[in-house]
Image (cartoon, rainbow, N blue to C red; front, top):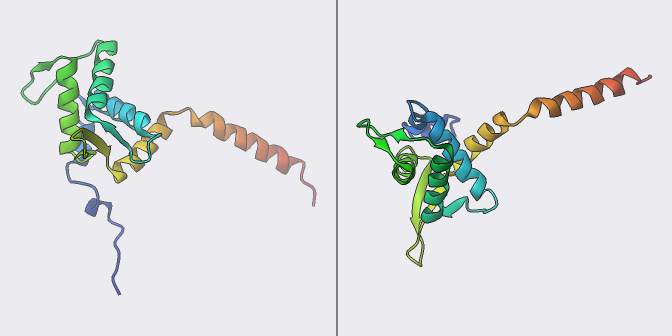
Length: 146
C-alpha cells in the first residue's frame, strides 16, 4: 500500500515564496491577484501573454510606480510587466503554454490558484460577514427554549 504524504513542499517549488519577499513584493502580489481575478471566469485559469502584459502594464501606468530588477535597474511599465511575468514563471506561480495557433498563454498553476484564492479572501472585508452570522446565531440561541 502506497502512503501519501501531506508535505506541501513536495508540491510547491522551493523558490515559490521568493516572489513575495523583497522590494517588489507588493507589486508582484497585486499583479498576481489582477491576473487571478481576470482568469477566474476561465476554467483553465489562463490568459494570453499579450493580455497579461497589457493588464500589468496598465497597473504600473495607473499607479505611476516603477520597480527595480535584480541589478537595481529601474523598469518602465512595459519592462515591469515582462519582468514580473518572467518572475512568476521562475518562481512556479505560472507556466507558459503555446497553443496550436502559436499564441502564448499564461497559465496559473493549480496550487497557486488555491493560495491566490486564500489571499484574496484575506483582503476582503469578511469580518462584517462573520459578525452578521454571529449576531444571527446569538439571537436564535437567546430565544431558544427547551
